[in-house]
Length: 423
Ligand code: AMP
Image (cartoon, rainbow, N blue to C red):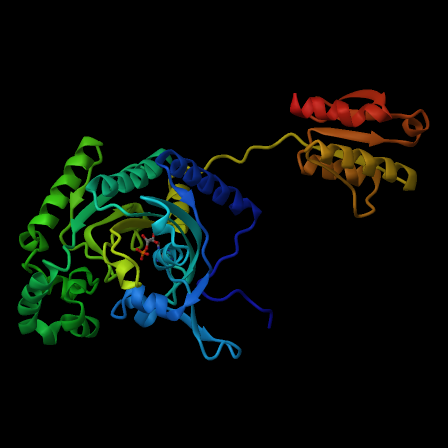
C-alpha cells in the first residue's frame, strides 16, 4: 500500500503556495504598519509549558495534544505546539526580553498541531498567523490588536465579518461569577453533556460555549459576566468599546464568548466569517494578564490573537478574492548538441547572475520538443542556438508573443535578454 499523508494534514503544491505567499506577504505588511516584529519558536516544546500555559482543563490539553518522549532525554515529555502564545511567552522569559523592552510586539506564522476530528476547515496540522503585545494593560492595545485583525481581513476584500467581543473578567471578579454559574447549572447537571458535567466545577464558563444543543438550551438565562465584572474590568471593557467605536470597527457583544484557555483575562474577541459554515471562526484572541506570571515571570499584562490561515484561504477562495497568478517574464534557451549546450549553459548562468528567470533543456529533448516546452512554461523570450548561428558566433532571440526574431552576437545575448526583462 502506498504511504499516504497523515489524516488531517495537507500537501500544498506550487499552485497553492502562490496563495500562501500572497496572504503571508499581506500579513507581514500589516504587522510592519502596526509595529510588530516576527519571531519563530520551536515546533515542539516541553509538555509542561502547555499544561501550565494553556490549562489542564482545556480541550486542547486534555484531548488534542501530540505528546511524545524520546529515549535519550531522560524521559522528558515533549508536545507539538497546539498554539503559539505559550511558546512566545516562554521565549519572552527565557531571553529576558522583559528586561530589555518596555513594550514587546511580536508576530508569528507557522504550523500548529491538534489531534482533533478533521473536517472542512479543521485540520490536525494547520497554520496560524498571530501576534502578541506584552507589557501593557491599556485597552488602547486591545483595540489596536482587534483593529489590525479586522483591517487585514477587510483589506483582503472580505465583507460581512462578525466581530464579537466580551470581557471574561479577572481573578478578582471571575470567582464570584463562577460560583453564580455553578449555582445556575447545578440543578441541571444531569442533563448537561458529559464534557459539561466535568466542566461544571473545573471550568464552568466553558459550558457557555458548548456546541451541544441541550447544553445550549440549558444555558439560556444563565447569569452574564457583564453583571459581575469588577470596577477595573468594567471600565477596561467600556474603554475598549469606546476605542473600537472611534476606529469605526463594528462589533457585537457576545457574553458567551469565553474561549477555551484559562489564562485569558478581560478582553476576549473572535472574528467569524459565517459563509465558512461550521468552522466559521477565522481569528480569536484576548488578554492574558496572568500567563507570564503563571510561567514564573514578572507580572506582565498582555494580549494576543491567532488567525487560522487555512480558514482565511478557504474564505478568500469562496469569495474569489485570491489574485490571478501573474506571469513573470522569463526566458528559455533552446540548444542541441554538446557545443551548443555548453554555450546555452553559459548564457543561463549569466542570466541567473542577473536574476533573470531562465531555463534550458535537461532531458535530452529534440529541438521541437524544447520549443514546445518553452511555450508551455510561458517563456517570453526564447534564445535559439542553431548550428548555423553558432558557427557565425550568433544567436536568435524569438519574441514568443509576436513570433518576431532578432539575431544578436552570442556574447551579447545575456545582456540583451536582461535589458528586455528588467527594462
Ligand atoms: P484558537 O487558538 O483555538 O483560539 O484558534 C485560533 C484560530 O485558529 C481559529 O479561529 C481558527 O481560525 C484556527 N484554528 C484553530 N484550530 C484549528 C484547526 N484544527 N484547523 C484549522 N484551523 C484552526
